[in-house]
Length: 141
Length: 422
Image (tube, rainbow over all chains, first blue to last red; front, top):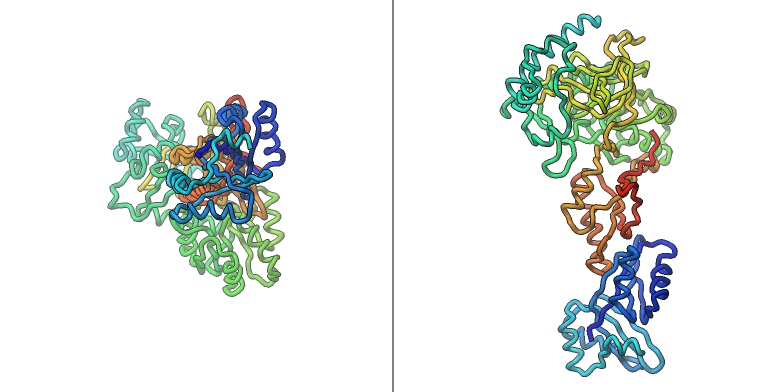
């Protein structure tokens, strides 16, 4: 499914990541997945959180440069080759993936990805009966 | 020339230029009519204070040729200062203006002790900037050997200096120090160079910087002053005594005013330097406000010259920065950001001098995260960088920062941190 990801612009400064996470924690917003893309000067923190809309307003109020982005979330069994299988469905359609991150918990694994053409990517995955996670399912992992 | 005689010459030339701008430049005629002045009211320099001022904004508003006092067919060359599109200041020279310019630069060089036996390496930029070509024709006029190497390419500068035996170096003082450093690094034997005089200008520099240049390059470092609106380099220059810059006041009449009240200040007071160009044909300017702060000294110099001396400029009455010899206004950065409309116009300019070269860093706040890809943010930074470079003519290091991280004072952001010491 297409779910909302929280993206935050961060300067490369000590303690900034902690500040974001502390602010979310104080408001009881749970972080399910997180990744940081960085350059020498700045980075982008990308997160799947339990309540993206509330997190957006909270961080915006605190003066962060933040936004919500549509990403696709897929569940796969936690076994060899399962990520590859999911991604092959997208690349076969010649859709490029802009970034992705994955994680596994017990027997289940999940991929969060942003594709150039989210709608077509989603259709490709659906037609092959891939297990797509909606926000709630991802939260309950 | 005795000062009484000089004053008679200035009086006559002033009457003549006032009449010319009144009849040939609608902008001046309007200004004078508004002030209830006719050319007959100005009998000499004692009446200067009655005339209206001219500012850089006036030149921008009449961009590009609106203030020219002759038809374009009489103009042989234009120069321009940096600016956003349509906001640069353009200056035009007739054949006689170019002749006068060469003459005043030649005078400056002679004042600095440069003559026809010299080999002058001109490391000022050639082009729209007046530094390179201005020095060039003045140096030709005194009959020296001109090496028009232009700015940059430090290795080549040093090589030519060795091979040709250049005796005079003309560039910005910070570049002179940078050259000294580069020579020390590549272990050039400075004692074997024939360099003896440096003619340095286009940016403010201190006495301690002068001593450093003189010691490291083993030369006499002379300060030359000018601005494109008045003519370019050649407005004034130090003599061997390095005790103030002699103004070529038979062409450019100086005044010192209080930048707040705009009233003329008595001799010796520190204030803003104002020039009236009395011989220029293409772009004669009446009471042009330079924004440079200095003092005037009318005593005869030990060198015998009676021309008034201005002290080294030590400050500005506006927010203009001079970075690597290039004039930069913070508002230029602001208009770039507004024009690009991809960030909020919140920025901070940080100027520093690292290894004797000015550095320009601009922090820009990313207010809204319109996209979350690194490549898009880098693309934004690169676009800003290109736009700044093409607008200002110098490169800048752009740094994207988080919103509201640039300090604000009384609701207004501080725009500039200049860490250089003048």
